[in-house]
Image (cartoon, rainbow over all chains, first blue to last red):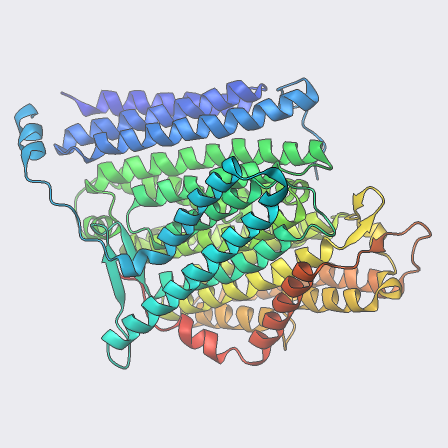
Length: 99
Length: 505
């Protein structure tokens, strides 16, 4: 097994997620890109667990999943509440606070 | 490979020893947070507010008592100099001298923030959900300061952040900007914690473990991949610097400080800074001391950028909450100067600075919450013109707090800057100290601008009124101001406590 391919794939996924956060306009899509970044990290962790022959990395991946789930709860609640008052989930419309 | 996994899994798993006495403060705060959720669910609405205040206050008082009990037993066990502390939960949490100091700081600042949040006489625009969220955030911050491996640190980071995102959006009046602050804080915060996590994964690949001590061991003279080490370190530090609102990672700070309810801003500004810098100090000192010559130059740059951004953008602000936000960015730069002075003075001076800055900041947000016009808080600086003629006392207190933020002698801000800069000098960072002094002078200008505005301008016709503060707010502002003065005159006791010992891993 060559870990390099898995690490490159996870780095690629992480980069796609990062670029998505920076260029997308819809808060939900931005949020999905953040989730993609977290899952890319999971892939890295599992790969390194395999390389090191330990279970630690796999256990950490579970922790990350739990945290990601908690983040979804909080994040969607916040995005929903702003959507209700504004009728829009675009991050460009939230422009009362600047400079 | 598969057999190896199975063999490892089948080994006898021993339950780790838990030093309950040491972690009792955290357990109490988080336990009362759960209790507070139950109160929220089962108690009738009209009785909830008072009960929630009681639960939160009891949590902080009991946690403080158990902290004091542990400190005295710890000191008694180790002879005159005191034991260094304990690591517990299989090395995941390290309750050492800096952690104890930071816990004490967080609980003390928590009391002040709770007083501001609990006062409904002037603001009163929040739901009771704020109390359980407050306790969870406080518990997360306490774990964050004491986390001895990166995974614990990450979980603590989320436990402290997620409630804060929600607390930002809780304002009932000014709902739009409050929610906007929550969305911005959430998206950027989650983005930054993803970076932290990727850094964690790379360091795991580097060292085969996420314990700070193991990373330190691995970093000393091995032929492992430097790419993993420095890639991981860089990403990890970006996540930490974001939380501390340092330098180029500060973009959320002004928006969130302005949009969040003022009492929440006070809590966030003071306590998050303490927790984040506690984490930064521990990570840099315990795990990366041996590689400091590689990364220190970068953090020099970050510290300079942070001071420059805070001082220069602070000059152009027209909103008093945004101005304090940029001042906090500048202060984060000064704190980073102390944090990268990798000696014992650097540690103790940064701890002292955090305590001093926290009290001053909470008191100044308390003052800001009192100046109101018809539509809510009057945070626009033009409305503050001539405030000294309307309310000399309030203007006097705010002037004192601003002077403390600027670092004028006889205030805690001066002593804080003095100890941090002298620690940095002793570590041979003279150019950085000179730059820091220049930027403190620039920053002093915008604090003094507000003082001049309050004392030497004619008050506007339809200017804001100064509300009569409720008992809670009065106590919070008085305590904050008193500590600011006390630490400026008699800093010895706190400085001694801050320098009583280093990190234990």
